[in-house]
Image (cartoon, rainbow, N blue to C red; front, side):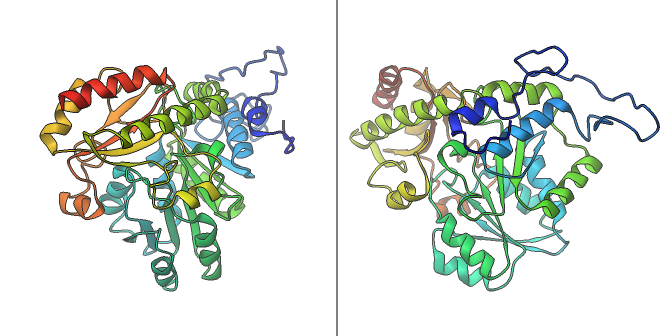
Length: 384
């Protein structure tokens, strides 16, 4: 189904969701096959080998393209494998400008795997003058995370994309924290959008996956060729699970946001909390920008417990409903200590220069009853 006039909550269910032609099944079948019979050598029905293409994966790619308002989508075995393909797609010796506050796995990939192939410069992308200064040097790409992980800094996608086009630089936006429900970077001018499908898009903490959406056919073809050659394609079963999870994306994101905003306001008033960072709070330094370029504020909250590692550890060991685990974006609430967990690969000195201290806590607020979540936090903060 390719009706662009349909609204998001309709597209999320129906894009790529046509009934099975052979049986009429309303749910897409899992084409759990490695290969496909050909009528004659080289004459097939669009599918040769599942590493290259698979009908279940095709449906997911159609859905994701519709949600991000893209012509092309490609899904991979993980978010990092998608990023790796994109780094391979750039000419050797390229310069990439990256936000300084990015997911620890992104930082690790750039600085320990591709650091000999490319040059990376990490900057504060909320500073437009600084961004333009580096764009003038004509890098191959600027990599934005907005909101960032874990400090939830927000960069002006539209203005940065305008600057990037002026200097002929490709703009990539990691849209994982917002999902296409709350933010559509391609509409704001980005060239490529990436997602960890593991997070909000799947939403049930049972799949690892990545995705890239773009309107640039040349870049898409290059990345697809690399995927086919290197092999990090998403499996048919995982593609089916994401298709199943994505149907409730709209209603889940609304509940994530509703709970997160209530908890953020509650935390801001708590005597055991030093500071709360949430785009939906007026105290957020880019609150006005968030209201302008996003249609919602998401389910991620960062806050600082009064004290240090001892108090943080006690808090993290006491929560019950908030499960202490890496990742985010599932229906269940999770809590993370970035300095020890998700961002441990970033050297301590750099972490602290960014503001990632030992008393920083990251919440992925789920869709449970919000009063129960607040009660859980209250008990843990009291003990901390």
